[in-house]
Length: 107
Length: 130
Image (tube, rainbow over all chains, first blue to last red; front, side, top):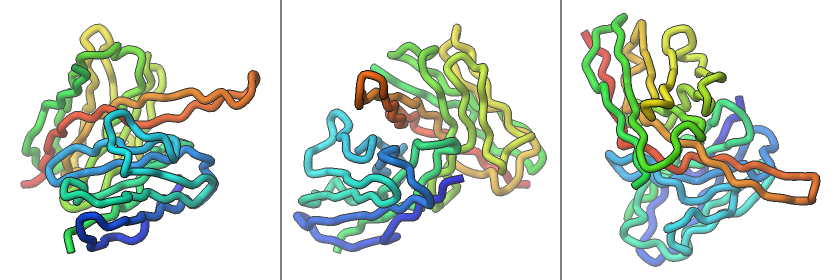
């Protein structure tokens, strides 16, 4: 199975901050990398697919980059509704493994 | 509206069984592979099982292999997860999710299919306790 490792596990930030979350795969996965946002008690929501494509309806302050083994999710100007947990997930092979999550909290 | 609705939530004793259902609407259910993903309390997301669009191919995580069975009825637009020999570590919120794909044509002979879970149900809770 491909292991996905996110960093940091949590971060504290303020509204309007720019934040970056990193995801590393245990082997090359080309651009087969997705990002999800999850709020407490809710289902995950797709933000980014194929490493850098923005899902329809997702604000443009979210962006993704990377290929191979190293990927990043950037929120250019953090908004109050962005405080949540973010997961990366590879779709290069089955099982579709997820990172352990990054919790973004209010400073 | 594209929607997935899970049902079958319950409290089960260790060793017991439970069947989860996931009703799909608003899209052509028979065209998509479908996933079960679970989340234990306070933990991350785990891919439990997947079934191909026609039901001919399935996958199970090692943690549930031999105990869980995924199936689908495309005539009823419904996905199922039959869970048996339940353990405390199976206690979680179970989500069903649709996997979509986008094709990128790099060259006339080379196409790449990128997969992602774009529709999720709200989840159903399985509690395993005596």
